[in-house]
Image 1 (cartoon, rainbow, N blue to C red):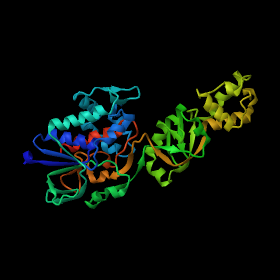
Image 2 (image 1 turned 180 degrees about the vertical axis):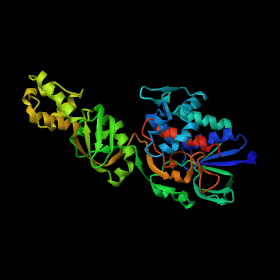
Image 3 (image 1 turned 180 degrees about the horizontal axis):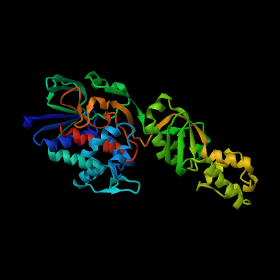
Image 4 (image 1 turned 30 degrees about the horizontal axis):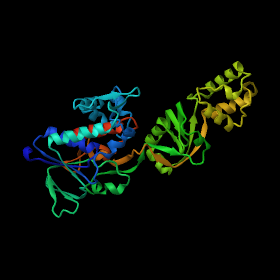
Length: 407
């Protein structure tokens, strides 16, 4: 009977809490228990967004929302009609957490503190009577008829549950998913996503801190290309354009062992002839000016001087002295500036994986396993990952909300 329903949530992160709260709302008399193997709850929520927690993105349509997921976007479309970013905003604000939409559509708590989100979840679980057990690592899970037996830590007897929601988060290694594979689920190999590029041999790292608002960045030998801001760091490059490439190219870059070359278009203009024409106009209109004193495409002084040095043009050279050959050389460095990447770094301590339980093994209308009855999934344990901007949390809220319906 529903009144005696026992529900286990494996994982005390964002998706685990959201699915647990959803389950309790749908089945008020059920016993809901969240099992977290560590001694800390919602650790990823705490550090996300630089400690501010980017809860979602305020993009206007579901189609636009879906495009932010290199993996899982198409499958999420139906799910977003059940619970989307607008529902997320309403969910938090109806529970006393006012949100702020930034100019870039990222959504944060008005408090600018992730602790506000953590406190909201803890308050909701307390009010609804959800049990939370820390330090509870699942050692074994087994289905017997329609029930689930779960062995926890060193307990000699299993606990019996009617329904289980798996919300264990992204696993950096396939070994963390073997138990789900053993139950019959297809597993997509996990690899890192959403990371920045290391360039240990490149002198541009001396310009650490410089941000260029509009760039086009591509990866040689692939079709991967991204537009947007780029940040030069002490170890290489970061910023939205780089993060887009790392997200959409997660598997390709993993196969390359994170050793490849990128081309940066500092002019943000894919038509090289237009760039050449603009430089030619500058050379004519400002012929008597030093190259160092007239910067095109709103480039910072430090970056412009670096690019001139890379072209082997002295700062004292005049625009009129460039000539046809010099203009072509400058056009090439502005549109096809090449850098060697050798390695990756985690973005702001946030860990996102590409891979997990294949969506082929899950009914996306209910988040129930297609191979195991009464077993559900939520969050990053699924082969779903989004770009930066609140999209990964949105996937957690959506899948958690639906999984909690236990349909």
